[in-house]
Length: 302
Image (tube, rainbow, N blue to C red; front, side, top):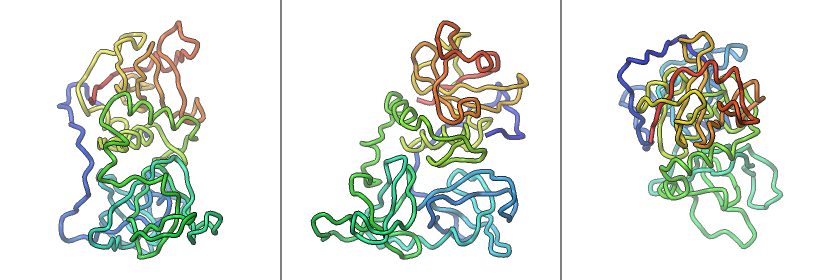
């Protein structure tokens, strides 16, 4: 998403890091998100600007609290205010395998019957803990949620965190497939869940599923990895390269993921009404002249 920061092409590159179980320093409380999506706002008010989102099972560090709101920071350090009702202690049982939801949408149910009442939605990357086995045939498996509650969802939608790298390997082609699987997700300023994204929230979530932690805003992502030459038609872009755009020619305000074919990119934008594919190549029917004119930098993370 746009940010008041400015990208400096001469700045030392920040390096992407592998995602690990988050451990915050002692002192401030650590809680987990217990709702499908927790909105982060600039001020402690539902009317305040949406700056980002966190999803079910993500850990947060509580910085301060005020009138039923908590100012928190996720594993990327991005801070904002969320309603305290969105948070709860993780309370994962010792030794319980952690699970990651692998579909762009899903429903967590109140009981093991496939038609049981919905409890909450599931979005890509949501986390829960596996409960003890022993379910009956035809019943949904049980998962444990922050706050100590239980829910039920299809076993095929989950993968154990320890095996996430097999389902989402650190490869450019696999990352491109994940990004393309999110086509059609609508645009939302501050969105970073598979319900709705902004440009950098989309990029951060796609890379995060493959174990690569990127910062939240486009201008910050423009300092990750190694600088490369994209070429005027995007011909220098390899799969999963990041390309950045600046409407005024200096301040990065948009980011896209290269597909590695004829200058094509996948990105989340208002012009596409969400996640979609465009091209920087004038010979391509998907050519987007405003994007081509505003491209200012490209980075290679892999």
